[in-house]
Image (cartoon, rainbow, N blue to C red; front, side, top):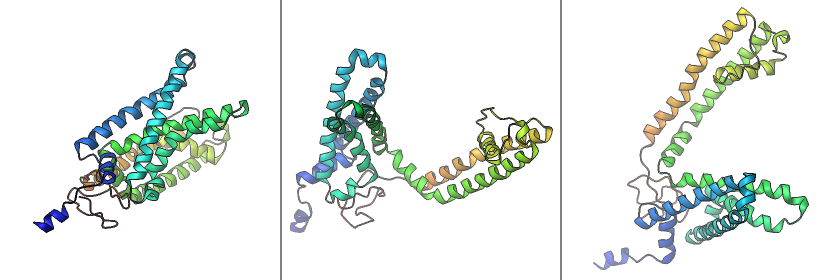
Length: 274
């Protein structure tokens, strides 16, 4: 009984804070994620609406106040994430750590850069607030599975892209020989551009073959395009099926989050997850 009592030590405030902010397996964690998702969506809407001149002229001050409210709330969240992590540097230099910083930094920079000559720069920096959209990814459960699937299929995707690149270079070169500058294919790079547009079934129509041979080759490329589109979808789908389920637990020591459902210890550093 004594050993059991020792094992079940009460969590300190940092551990409880980490559980709420970084995990979604608990009621408090889920509530935090839902509230944060709503704030992120609203903050992005403020940025989008602020770019409309007519709306900005009417409620520009209200939007400015709303932006500062969101910035302060996200700043508090950012500080809490640093405090609750055992190794803050792991979070600060992680992908989401950088995104969280980009979500709040532009608003503070607008206070430092004062002067008419900096107005254009400030407006460009304010556009970085749209990076808050990326903050949503961490709160979507399926994003972990998709991330694993993309990582596992990256080699196959690279090979696929190499094949596609080879095809467009060959087809573009052939089309340059068949059509030539007289029909708009002024160079091999321009012909390769046409091949990419045609193979991806975009079809801008700014360049089109005029000869029978060129139109025949174009028809083959169009048909091939439909077949190629299905390849990356199949590759990623297979890897997503293999990815399985992951939970929302994040290691306090190394900030690793891709843990299996039954994991009790971090696979990267051995830290206890329970």
